[in-house]
Image (cartoon, rainbow, N blue to C red; front, side, top):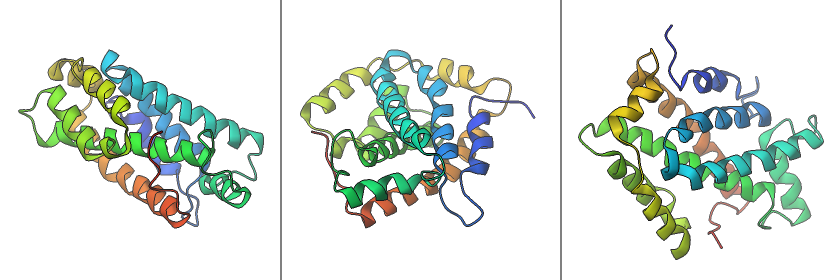
Length: 202
């Protein structure tokens, strides 16, 4: 099977759930990490997203490493903070998971746009997915810096060639979106159940 930039993430997603269907911390974070090299290929346009995603992965990973058996399940990190009433803090893992999930929503939407709108430029794909996902959670400042960054989006064809490698990139993008999207929905559902899904950026 010829690999694309999505191959590692597609492989990783097979291990995200435990046998009981619970989201596992390390495999989920690993899949998010495997998206970073793809974000990299956007260059300057995604520098903000990349540092945000990377920072949140590191925060959650450090928490996991502090006690791998206690935090084997992704949501256990949040439950501990909810009970300690620290979940709403800006440096909490709950906040990290929320923004990591939102950034991934944005990327899934962006990859979908690339599939569904072959005539759109990369900037159009980015701006549309931003409008549908992150924009409502961002304040004016974050929103305007994002809009400026989107103008630096790379040429669409070049980008697709780079991430396509030797495989069929459209098939892999499709697979990635259909498999990853339900996991993100599950995160939102869980965060909503503990009253943490509607925090806005400060």
